[in-house]
Length: 489
Image (tube, rainbow, N blue to C red; front, side, top):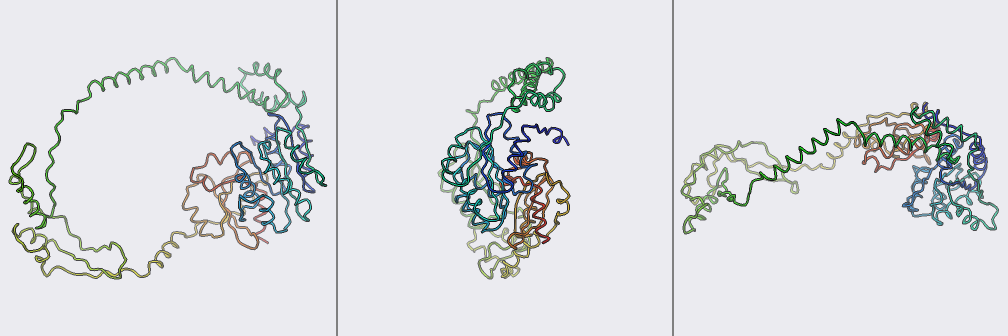
């Protein structure tokens, strides 16, 4: 409701949108919309897709200076053909021709800030429109919003001697009555009374461009917030200064009282002892000190060491565990606590090996490695991918056709969809619906609902980083409804 209240179509803007709709409805055309910064080109591009091109398969590309042509091709193709395979290194014409294979289509591609496109990309778009113009049952139109007239000059050279020509339109400044209506409806009514007088005076000096008029309210509000944050409350400022001074005093005192660790003697290192010593370890531990010619400060004599051989060892468990399964069978020895006690009670200088002291209680067990590892892994995986979701076709059809959603993924297996839902924590509503493409079943995963395409695009930035890696993109609900109807057919 809030969005609908802030939508204002002026007469000049409505006439421009009607001309664009007429040029792209019945045949393929390339339309260039020129306008200076602040003329409202971005708003017009979004409004055209929302209200004037509902029956078309849509793609929106916002150009940036750091974008490469491969990224721009992928953005367009992913919105038009989300379930098809393509290569972003191929030209748009080759990819679309390979995907459609002569099938009918009704496509519109809207490009914002088109003056940032490379000449190679402009040539690809012109070739795509030209091929669809001569193909039966195909309608592909491109509408480019930009600031420079160099786009039209380059495309005029490409279309020289051809029947189809690019069409150029201009976004004019608002009339005086339209500018005042725009200011009162979208700026003045949302301002506080304290700044209304200043903003009215600034409006008289502002050019009649939507961008500059909207900036009046935003700049005044930003200045007021900055001033309040800088001034603040005197009591809060005094408390902050007192805390800062206290922290400085405590830090300086800690540096003065920091102990000097340069004269601290090194700790005495005692020989390491094992809980259950064997005969070989005990002989080694006795021979090492005896080879020394005396004791020095900081070392402990061997004769003064306490004998802890009578200490009980840790409890022995009778459960067997396998380490590695490369062989079919393995043997392991299970020694009870009585045998360990008997070993500890023997004289220290005996030459008999440890195994010789083993009593008949020593048992040899054969541990067989499982032979059906692959079968077990598959059965566990099947248990983990139990289907717990249901299709949301009716709930999606109940949503307004003019709204938008984010497509997270498109898969051909229900198990893959369940794995995706199990792997990510989504904080918004996830809806899954089936569709058909070339007589093949596809399952589309969508995320939340948005009133405008711009709101859907902005929501991508607030998604978790692991969800962003899936490549979510804005998708019109009207296109979702058409794909749901394919499943019924």
